[in-house]
Image 1 (cartoon, one colour):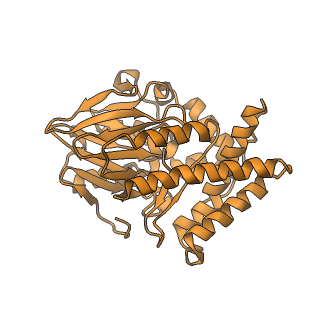
Image 2 (cartoon, rainbow, N blue to C red):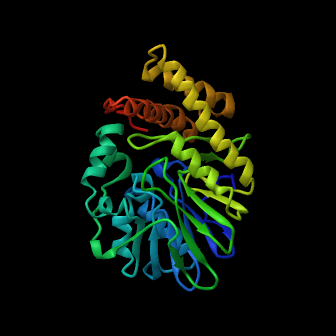
Image 3 (spheres, rainbow, N blue to C red):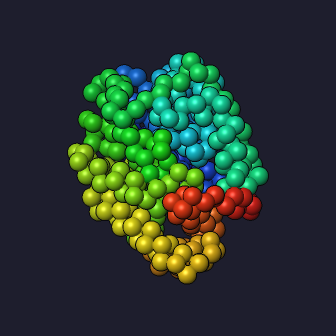
Length: 325
């Protein structure tokens, strides 16, 4: 699963991975086409990835107009930002998202404003325009809801807060597959270590809630974890345990650093040191790993800092990222 390739990847006989190539980077952002009597797409990627998603669906031999469900794990722009674009090409599709996030798909103005507060004014250039979705096309869901695609393909919605309050994971009960969104972290499957790195963005990230979410996944009958960033792994328990370990480690690290009034930049540098040790020095020139170091880890540091600021009743720092990836 970790090697780079231009074509879709067959996960099972009824599930296909489509590479959304966000920022032009392969092996970074996954969407998953699930084929039953009805068709579902898990994750849309950002609006800029919509042509690649459509092409990937067609490569499977599926007409995008036959898609019944666009399932978004959460409304962050790299996961659901393309839903408004894709739904215009999929007249049968309903957009599935946690009930707490549905309003941000109907009116994405606050979502875009919040994203600009973290990443700066280059959001449209990075992700493309976020189009609103008609309320009648929305299908709000909650923990435990089932989407039955037929042919034995039952998808259970798993409420999975921590990364974001409205986050859901999608559990294919018959296949034993959990589509994790960002609940467990980002899985760098092309690295020698097949490394897992946390993803901890403001404004809602809470490490304690996130850890409880991951602990709950051990109760599911799982044989595969399929990440939105990126690909799948059979090492279920080991990977879930690593997700918990890193969330705890970085929480303790930031807590200790804040006792000496460490800056956001100093926290970011510590995260970079940890991640470089995990990935090894040979990845410094790779586009994906450069993105992780230059953009993802500063966002993670800001998410942890915001978590501790919220506990003290302070406001989040904004506008941290102004560079083009």
